[in-house]
Length: 280
Ligand code: PAF
Image 1 (tube, helix red, strand yellow):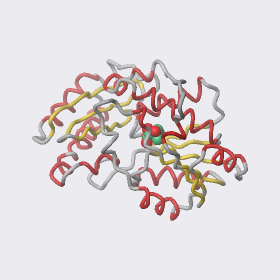
Image 2 (tube, protein in one colour):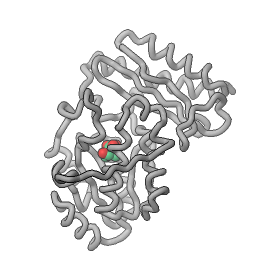
Image 3 (tube, protein in one colour):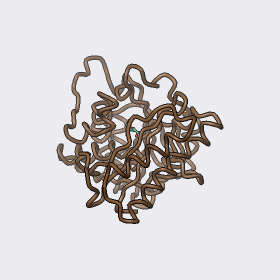
């Protein structure tokens, strides 16, 4: 496995690589959700490249950039064992050199529910993903469905800017309890971690409601909200929302596949999760 810090070297290595080339962009602190992206890339691509870069521009001023878990040695050994060929670990100055002043603003999907709660977040995500795709020029890039609004933004970015990369979205990987793997789960103490299981229980309940014929979005979201609020360690819900999975517009009636997404605070940790109703 080759470790690369410079974007010129990364561009050269990717250009010279056997095709198809699959790219797995990450912010490190790898977990089974990331490894599912790597495994899928491994099965579909002759060369697999991963990036580890905690992108400062996608964190708001009061968010967790400084405390975001950084576990580089462990991440590298996981990637090596999984058969990754190239790992790009640029510094912030390499990605945002002095004078950097171009931003990618995806409209529409970036104003979806997660974008409204994290102003500027998707501008940072779209900008760094555009840069990583330009540097690596992969045939395919792999992202997790857990960040449902992010996948809609990245699909739109690739489509609107004519990027010749196929965006592949992989289903959310969950712990046996149903809790979605997330780097931010590391912030939870054991009690909070157990409490966080309510999120998937509530999503699974929504799925049952949908399966039994309920199509009224507000009825489903009210039940999900009540169930999550019944957990004493939950200290806030940013949203429980059902949107069209592509446009991210809220729907009143679930007539075709739609994303039920939640953002929940447990202790100081904000967790997001979603399921697609009508596709389960
Ligand atoms: O999903 C993530 O880890 C990040 O948002 C990404 C796509 C690597 C961009 O920094």
